[in-house]
Amino acid sequence: MLKSLFNWKVLLNLLVAIGVFVGLVWLTFRWLEYHTNHGQEIAVPNVVNKSVHEAIKILDDAGLEYEVDSFKYDPRYRPFQVLQVYPSPGSRVKDARAIQLKVNPRTWAKVAVPDVINKYAGLAFQRLDQVGLKVGDTIFEPSIQKDAILRVLFKGNMIKPGSLLPRFSTVDVVVGSGPMRNISIPNVVGLTVKEARGVIAKSMFEVGLVDHEDGGKDESDIVYYQDPASGDVRDQGMQMDLWASKKTPAELRSKIDQLNSVYRMKSDTALPPIRYEEIPPHQEPVYEPIPVPVPKKETPKPEPVKTEAPKTASTKPASSTPHKTAETKPKTAVTGNTSTTGNTNKTTVPAAQQPVQKPKAKKVVVE
Image (tube, rainbow, N blue to C red; front, side, top):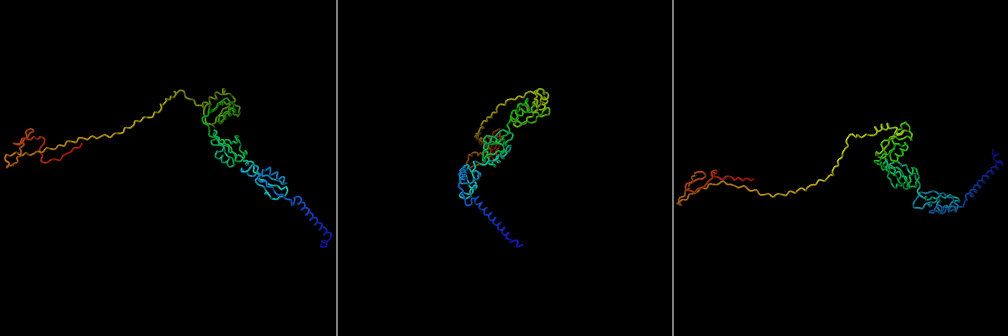
């Protein structure tokens, strides 16, 4: 086996195979150097802050390829201005190398308008702000959907949910302010059901029950009765029930009278009319000033006269002789209203008063 391995023919074939392999490797590297321009490099030109059109022209002249990518919009820079270059300016690259350009877009990226129709205004404003849309004017419109978003407007035109708008665009919203009050009911008797629907919607009411006499749903049937009646006043959004038939209202008089007995209230005209008397305007009462009391001057009351009981005085008789002094007790003789005493002086004493020996206490009467 070893002899066959060292045979000259085997060795010759092995040398030929090695030579072919080395030759192929050498040719491959030479082809790569020729194809990739080995040793031939180009410096990346500085195109930062230039417009994208100028940057593309410079790269074409330098024999370089380019890829343009929109960067995040920055209002501090001009639209389509080159903000970044990769590889960085001054780097050496091969010929036909693709250079990536980061360019400032013309405006903000577009966002989809969220579906806020029939949503509460507070929640709708929050959702619009989350996607980057600003709310401008708030227009109130009568509607039974109070404080709900009815429409979204952009530059005066209504836009549908999902429409694309530039970010930070300003949109106007139409908000329901509540139903209108005391709207007159239109007369739709004699119209087709289709025409009646249009009139009712235009008057800001809604169609309620539609009763077809034949049980069908033909919109061309003639309305011969409605409830509420025309001329009544209702709030916006109230429903109107319709009765329709292919016959005319004149042919359905008995049916109309039957419906009137159910849906119309008859007023009793036998009672006398109520008379309303005008009440005179209310007059404010006039109040007289309260007199201020004047203090009265007290007049002094007369003091009662004090009366004292008379005292009996003892009289001494005059003696002819000064040496003899003798008391003489008078002898009182009551004769009528007078009393006599011997030879002494006469003294008149009232009969009602008796002489007292001791004075009595004085009584003072104060009234």
